[in-house]
Length: 310
Image (cartoon, rainbow, N blue to C red):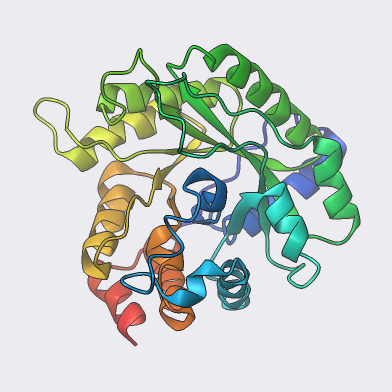
């Protein structure tokens, strides 16, 4: 699979273009395609994704160290682009794992307060000065991330904050990734392909380098679901679309869906959490490698499954 030529946003200062390219290459393993390890769910889903008494989730998953051990192993093997986590989570562990490429998630909220109770809102919990302090301390921060709930009554605040943080990130030579989900009382179906396409276009308009969106659950008329995601890919323009990994699936189903997202939809990667970290470390690291093979190396589903089952 041929690397995607890097595009340098016009708000990156000329003297920091090389830094930006180095961070982009680190995040995409030099391919322009991103295998993002999503570790922000300790806030987003609280402990639901990390402990079930050992029924389906390994008991080792409850310790946040599990995430960083996976990240370190996969980084040494060259099979993840970035580990995405909140500023505090990264700061608690990064002195022991400074070389992992990190994406600092600037905002987060739990899933306890539902839309019926309050419109979703998630505001920044740290600043670019905080992010730069991590970098000064030797932590390999390559970019920032931010979640926007488009359709919420609080959409304007999140849009404004995200746009300013993206601009600041570029001015420091960092990449910026958005998580954009249609959600709120104005949104009848957050998995509607037209809304997902709108979300991806919105990400381009606020300057994001990549954006994570949900996979549609229903297609456009006359299209398959992977083809429907392709409309969102086109809508994103020069912003690379990466798809949410979703809930845990059997490895063959998950890798088949990932292959379709990359090869039919044209997605430039995926943001995977549960399908990696809800596994013992050896299996988790092999899943990172299998995802990398599809996203960055053009592997078939069968080839990726061979890597996972090795």
